[in-house]
Amino acid sequence: MKAKTLKPTKVNVITLGCSKNTFDSEVLMAQLKANDIAVEHESASGDHNVVVINTCGFIENAKQESIDMILNYANAKDQGLVEKVYVTGCLSQRYAPELKDGIPQVDAWFGTRDLPRLLKTLKADYKHELVGERLLTTPVHYAYFKISEGCDRKCSFCAIPLMRGNHISTPIEALVKNAKHLAANGTKELILIAQDLTYYGLDIYKKRNLHELLAQLSDVEGIDWIRLHYAFPSGFPMEVLDVMKERNNICNYLDMPLQHGSTNMLKRMRRGITQEKTEALVDTIRQKVPGIGIRTTLIAGFPGETEADHADNLRWIERMRFDRLGAFTYSHEEDTHAHTMEDDVPADIKQQRATEIMELQGGISFDLNQQKVGKTFRVLVDKAEGGFYYARTEHDSPEVDNDVLIPTSAGHLRIGDFAEVRITEAREHELSAMPV
Image (cartoon, rainbow, N blue to C red):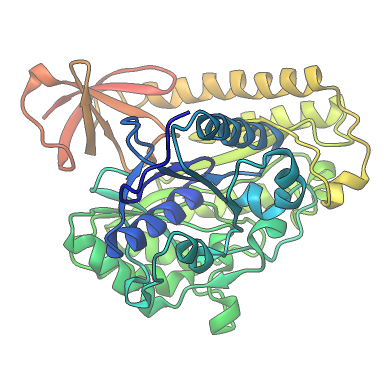
């Protein structure tokens, strides 16, 4: 075994799960850097002596991925390759008591709101003057922008309130200050995230106040795109659509997880909405903001889902023709209301239904993309790789939506800049284009 050294602390931060975790890791890294502690994100160099694993505990697959990562670094510690292993995030918040005995190599476990305690353990001071500052792990031209923490919804399938706590909005003035700081450092796109974006402001302003936040963020010089993720459909604040239509730098894009199209399933999921009300909401959104791109996610195989419910869901998807759609299989999570129900849809049927949803959506996505051929779009260039620039339209969020591929041979484009391109070819989840 390699002997322990007195070399300076160098931290490697590993992030698993969603963009909220990415944001939290970036905040942690900024605090460490301000304390003159060397820190990298998912470094492959192997010269770090401390590892912080920011875990996900949302569904079974995510939990297993997090556990596997912890075990990997527990083994590295046994081999003397690292000296300290710390675990934070959602899995740690929810399961630390059960995991502690089984993985004794972990030096300490921290919850989702334990940043000051984690910093203290790393011999760093929590610097209040840095609130809102982050060490970006994304390309500098876009940043995830968390506007609130936690969730007050009671969806029957969801364990997030158990891991993230109640909804807490960040005040508008603090968010505007953070946006200005990002813009001054080259960020052009803010991707607004929260457990529930449309609940924003109810706790501190006693009203849904997302529209006012958007208006003030839109005024920040240097911010060219503002993108909305994770909008809850029930109680959707319509004023948001007015601001979106008025402001050129608010993307005509909305990520609104709807979870199912069957009223029967929506009721069992405790979503507070019906199929008819969902359709009316989507119709209104499309009427008020013509050309908007709507992304949604759906759950396949929720307890009690019958073949008739699934067929109803497929017909609804066909009618709705969402621009973007993802589906995942139901995960039976303890301490949720749905855990009191029988998990009665076999795993292979869950997977089959999710596959059928994605195959149907694949055809819809292909048809919608074909309509873009020959048209001109403004795109943001994310990277250059394999002879192509990878870019996105305002209807595309990083990692989850379409890429627009532009040959590097067609001319020089700068990463992080906008370009005008004409679509030359369209596939299911990818577009080809040439600069105009």
